[in-house]
Image 1 (tube, one colour):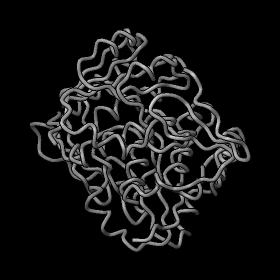
Image 2: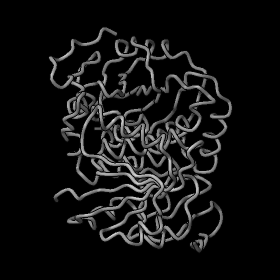
Image 3: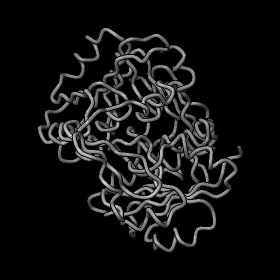
Image 4: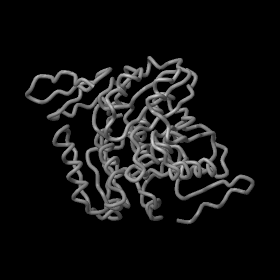
Length: 182
Length: 182
């Protein structure tokens, strides 16, 4: 199937407590093929962190914080999926998403308001064990896109050159840096 | 291929700063089929959190904190893999792991000492973009095991019953609870 346009909605972000996990959610969304991340709480620091990665590593990726999440889910015109350990099995839901053009993936923090379950089209468990919204998002996006997302070119200022032992980067407009001795 | 025995080694854990991300690493290791997690810094609080999940949700899973990580990597008898955005492509390395019986997966925090790259058998990038060690671990384990890890039975006191809209749990020795109204 063709890849849908993917938005990720992060609920329940508390800037002081959740900064690092929410940063992981946002960067995972970007690295695994989403177009944007929407965060329910205003957080200029999180925006700066994510925009800085986009600036250096490239790709079209937007972050908006302080969005009204209920309205975002209710007004969404495509298909919405909430990742939760209580949800239906991933393998049962994925076939139903074939051909979807616009996908909203909702990931909560520890407590998710009950009406989220009702407002979305699908509640999906990436496994039904307690683990991590970052893990759930990554595996969901990887399975949804059949791994093709890891082949995406980001065309950034910085490009990592995969290497067996070392750190090798290309800088746009410069020659490849030698592998950094480590 | 048969599934190897999988250990996860978490480097650079700082109890105050990394508690939540390291908890996500540990629970992701458990939920995606690893047998144990080893953490480089002593942290009884992290041990309690993880052991509490094991007690309630089942499975054979051990956590040890305060391990000597260099010795753990050097003395490991099986195959060791370090997940890093600088590493070789996942698709290039996975075929080389077919038939491995004991696997040690090393995941760092923000800064990883350079000699980690040299001591392991493979440095692997789950994509070569900056994102999250939780995401990298989850996708690596999912790809390695071809998704079979999500079918594992944990036989715990609590078992989630996958459901389209609600929260449904089985308690060992009791009848299934009704779907909790949400």
